[in-house]
Image (tube, rainbow over all chains, first blue to last red; front, side):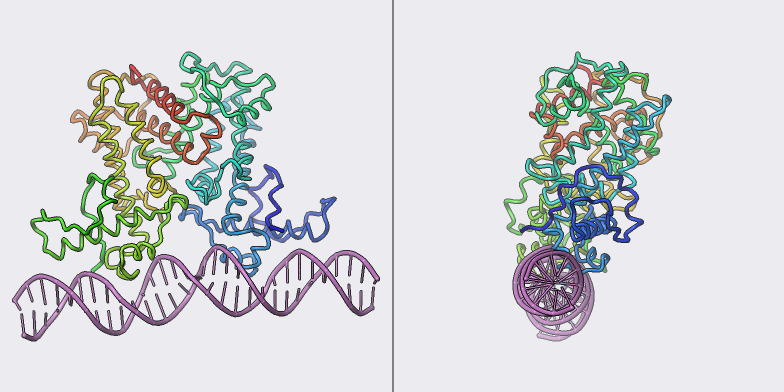
Length: 263
Length: 263
DNA sequence: CTAGGTAAAAGAACGCTGTTCACTTTGACA
DNA sequence: TGTCAAAGTGAACAGCGTTCTTTTACCTAG
């Protein structure tokens, strides 16, 4: 039997606090699980938590399995009871990171005021997360199948990625509904959208979302994401002085160009 | 005396062909250099060439110094006569990569036809390079000071990065000159640009470039770069089906929004 | 309450890595 | 031709991911 059976735990636990408490707290509220199962999940979580705290932010989110084992207080080989390999562990941490950023975005959306409009706030929440979690950012948005951001067809990470993109899509749909988004459809010719993504759009808006809107939104997201990438790589800092201010303008400019009104 | 004195060789050798010929060709046309100096440069170049060919594209552009030594036919310790450390070697390869992409962009600009406009062509040339050089892309655009894309204040990589951004800036200046770019200045408030970048703008256009234009261009570049990043990470493929077509539209949309006319 | 079975963990080992250091070879120049 | 620095070797060290064998701990059944 292969290890790593902890993959089924779906998206979006609160996260963000976990690193303070590592007391191996067994979850008391687990109905169908034996004592041993709960211990296993607790250990697995602890390994992931330690691993996340040990991600080398300046090494592209790299991770030493032996260092994790030392910190947890196990021998390196014991880790293999919980994860098939170092890469498997990194992917697990990557999935948690996707859930972490997704819930950060969701939290930002849960309390939007009237003054600060949704799109701008979402973009800033995204940037804040990226800056505050440089190692996880590197892990998730690094090129290569060996990393934590793997979104290939059969990858267990894939649903976490898709779930992450659900948040901006929901916002866009809401904006179209209440009329605060008027997409400039003159420019958008028909586009082919992946069925998997269309399904998510369907689940977000029962009436569905027009493919051109999804493409437009993807472009805007790319624009915002690109700024953050260049900022974190240090390139944007070569050009402008006030990064936060420049980002804010970039976001407003981008959103306005896809038809988001009133900032 | 520290090794690695090969840093002074500035930007933009042709590249792109080098990997085929590794015959340790001593450059005959080197006036002030002794035979030994030329041999050293040739060896250093060979090491870099081999290193580039051995960059692990699926490991975030990682590199094994011992593997390089094996391939070159030296002992690992001999490499240290030429590069202070593995990281130093990676940074040297990173500088070459910046020069490689810069010259690829420059080449694309050297033969622009009337049908295919400059900005669109530049963007596609950039995307093509990124897709064709995944390992170098990962090396250069990866987060973290330990990598090849280091652009910090004192880094020797910095001028190569700045030189790279000179190409799109020159195109923008030319576009403004001949009237094919009419930046929507209503949206662009005054922005603070880094003096280093302003100096480059000055060298490109004697009359200088208005800060808002640089900021606008930076935003457009971020938008284009962001699409490529998301494509290479595999995220964009989760959304749209035809990546090249979608990129083309994204580029045209972005360029139009910053005031580039006629596509 | 003891015995058996199974999961968890330990510990040693293998081949790899980057790096250092003492040593030998090589090649240019006086 | 002898000298001296540069180039290159080879051994060593600590750390790495991974595998295998062995021991420990616990749950369950008789």
